[in-house]
Length: 159
Image 1: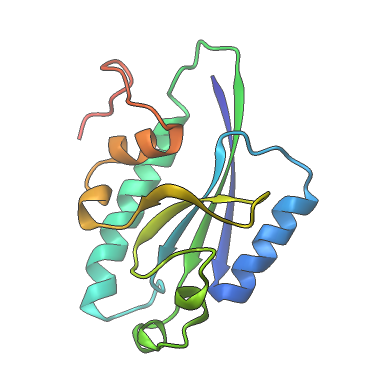
Image 2 (image 1 turned 30 degrees about the horizontal axis):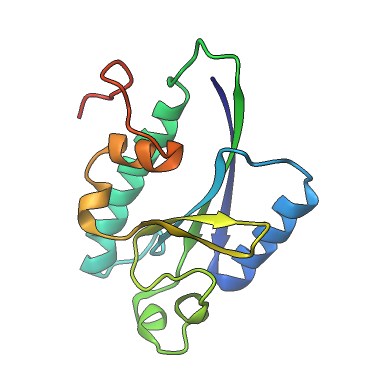
């Protein structure tokens, strides 16, 4: 299987919506899925974001790199879109009026959160969300989430 990964970055709700519009205009079929990692700012100094952002980003990067090594002998191609969305600083994120947290189509209440998003339906795919610390412990968990299947022993990445 050959994976094509289209990576995008967004800061806040408006840029995320612009990414969705760009992906729709591209006329690509993302048969592997559209995934969004919601995380804190790169320069964030609050301990909450420092710890979880670092761990989630490191594990997710390993998972994305590992996707390239899965099912190389298969003839099927799959297109994935992956968006990293910075949610804003700590105080803005906690505001009840935070546009990202208020957007019911995303269903994001904590950061980090990884969701699968349907461009066609305009909302998070039901049941396709990783939003607890345990979900970001291993790259294998993230790869299985993205592929929607368990990895074989040969496909597993050493922790």
